[in-house]
Image (tube, rainbow, N blue to C red):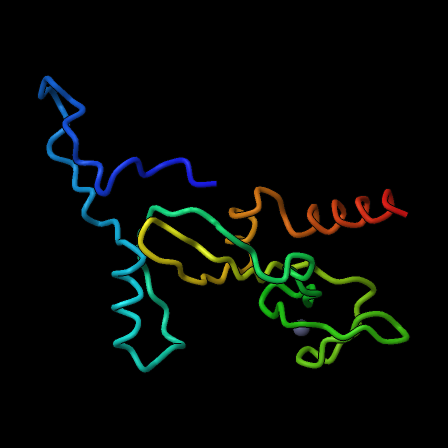
Amino acid sequence: MPSKNSNGNGMSSHNGNGNGEKSQRSSNLNLICEINDSLAGENDTDQYHFFFLNGYVSRIKNDDRIFYPACLSDNCRRKVMEDASGFRCEHCGKNYMTYQPTYMITAKISDFTESIYVNFAREHGTALMGMTAEEFKEFKENESEEKV
Ligand SMILES: [Zn+2]
């Protein structure tokens, strides 16, 4: 539900008396069409890009699979496989009794120009969802129990 962007760029004079604030640059915000343009010129899709944008989440892909079971080791966090004795991390060569639910969310972000898919991993997912992946997992589990 888009609520913001009343008009194109919010440069309308909202401070009548010029005390204090110098001209604050809102120009570090990119429109999504600009971001798409600049990404289209890149071949290396693995690169990280930093943009500031003012958009809204219009869709989340894979709504019920937005986290994965990750290794408990903080500097690993790779996906673990469930097996008979728990959860196995091939990278660490260890078995764990449990796992760390970790976000990997693909969300569609829109503004009034275009849309872009953005990945939100780990704590970025927490910021997006407003709860940790553990909390989300419990939330989903409770929800499905109630439906039964
Ligand atoms: Zn591991």
